[in-house]
Image (cartoon, rainbow, N blue to C red):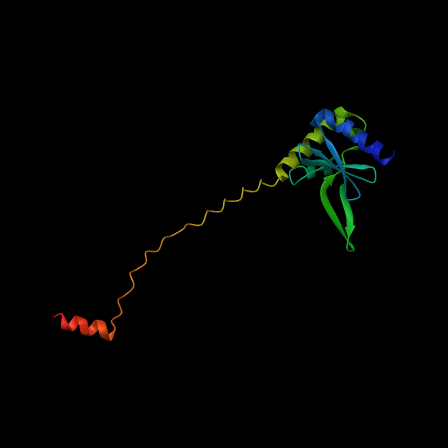
Length: 148
């Protein structure tokens, strides 16, 4: 299959279980999103579904493999696993695997950032000015003593 044909096939396979999906070209392949959550990764015409600690064992027991790539000379395993071969051609066979992927994506969703606090307007403080001290000069001092 050509790349875009494979993307279309995967969307047709997953949409009956998950609803409307969007595929975006990323990381040399595609990511498939459901409601803004990444539920699948497509790389080298292979489908990998989102997993987490709660679902990886289920995928492993079914004979599935994780998505692994090489970075800086070391292998990196991501939290995406291929589904069983039987699920790759039948939307009904894919349904439980797609649901597991969506559930894992929902658990992995980071909490929304708190809205930034509004900056308070600077408070203008009026400073009461003291009356200037009367400075006595020689003339005013003489006048004060002569009045007494």
